[in-house]
Image 1 (cartoon, rainbow, N blue to C red):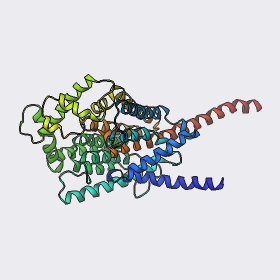
Image 2 (image 1 turned 45 degrees about the vertical axis):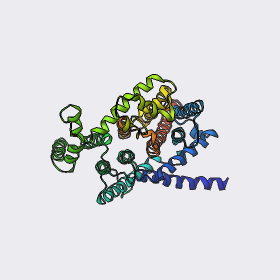
Image 3 (image 1 turned 120 degrees about the vertical axis):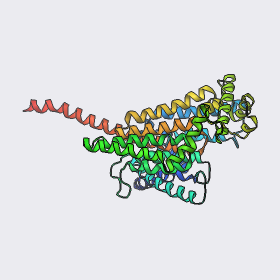
Image 4 (image 1 turned 180 degrees about the vertical axis):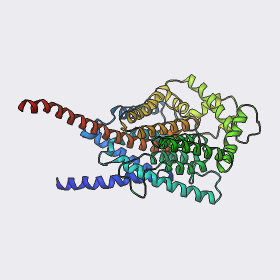
Length: 422
């Protein structure tokens, strides 16, 4: 028993550090965060399987939908006769199904939210340094050796997590809204439109919230200064250049005012993919097409067939999911996200954490409208590690609230007895 107790004491210490490492390494895309995610997922599966008291009651609907998603995916793969080896969808479905157990695997971490947030603050600094170094060697879009879009997604999660205020924050990583500004730098260098639109939302809301408790005169001065700075950034400098290069031509092109936009091919490919996807889904709405979905999508697309042959998915998480697993799979995946974020919002404990969860949800939906975060190991692990940590933190808030309520009830119940004795 003493040996087992020493093991759990060591695990409390090392699991906390491992979780912080998972947050810090999230934007680096070198397998560390996926390893951390899968480690805590495996621990969670084990604890639930043996009926551990602290794990079995933790967000049961979230865990149940994760298992249901995996079961439905494997059922369809077997029904279609698709191979299990070299089938990427098997890998993604296993990761999603297992990742629903992350919160259950964090029961030995004393304060998971604190360690994850501090790790994310380190990750923000690391992502900035890496982005600047890649920019110096002439990279047009920074992706840290890979696709810039998944890099931007995990960098956005890291940036959003870093601004959560935590208790006993270290001096070298204090609570601050500045992480929102610093974390915008790697996303800027990635040039990923779907997440660049989220950055101003986070910055503006956090700045207004930061100003709210200040005296009225300082609040008005701060709002005027913030508006002036935003106008200056949009009028000149690198932010102005980014808007002029990435957003204005797209707006002019799709409103029929500018037909010479060099990025129009990317947009037209997506539109053609989406039209083909909708036609394919209408033909097989229940079972979907699995790994061979793109052949049918390209055949039904109205144009650009030669370019579409190079595409591996339709660049929209809702259409992709309906194509892979049919409408039941889409309902399960959307339900998994909805239940997870609802649990966080219900039990988060403070407005800052609830607001943070809404930022991440907005980032996932925005990114998922033009890409698919559930068809990449990095983004799957980043999203579910964040959700697992937040659910685990919410569970601790729920336990504290129940404990306080029990104390109040016991005090109330003992009060009449004390007065009667007098």
